[in-house]
Length: 303
Image (cartoon, one colour):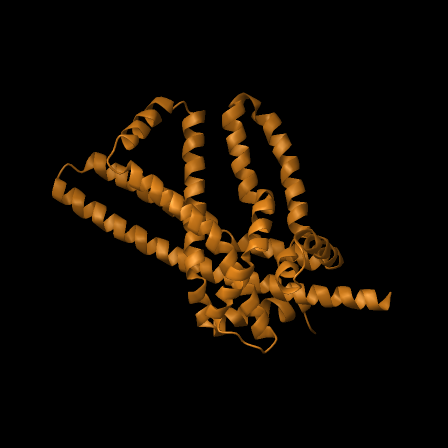
């Protein structure tokens, strides 16, 4: 007995990951940038919330002032700005190229994977606009807004804030379900943004259970975010503890060097894992989109 979810969506997506090593190398850079950006954001939010809720403002202010009076402040700010620009520009280019490459393989008209970057560069603006308009409905964006609002309004209003953001979260979940296939309509059907959203909503409604099951599956796979957060938070904490406990300059230098090397290795491994999962996720949604659109076409023809 054929299981459509398994046989027509998950297995073909897994075959792409298993049989095409080029695609994992292709998406390594955006995967690495994504994991660094997300982890920095989560660590920042957690530390800032801790400082606000537990009245650690004076200690935090001392550390911030020391940083701003250091010799590396200009380089750090410039490097962070460059990182943000590269991240926000490269992500839609690579994402467009990845979807186009998967489509070409499925249609037996394979493109060279790096050639798809030229297509992504040429047409990245619609996807760039889509990502910026609707990124606020993502879970991580809602969480950031929740933490920021608690800090801004105050912990004494947390119950009211929680109720408000629960409604926002439910609304965001509905939006994410309905817009599951919008990027594929935007890229493969070459539709405008809001036209793509309308088509995606129709596909999602007529394939509701499949869409929900895929979101639950991918939610489970995104447990990696917790691992990333722990690693990005734990290494700086360990380094600070080493600075406090180790008095010998030689041992301190050795400890910091080893920790720095291990941190870089972990980041590279997490970047590779992120790239693999992003390719797998994109492939899953691509095959779900193909199946959903075929079903929608059959319904229209039979009605």
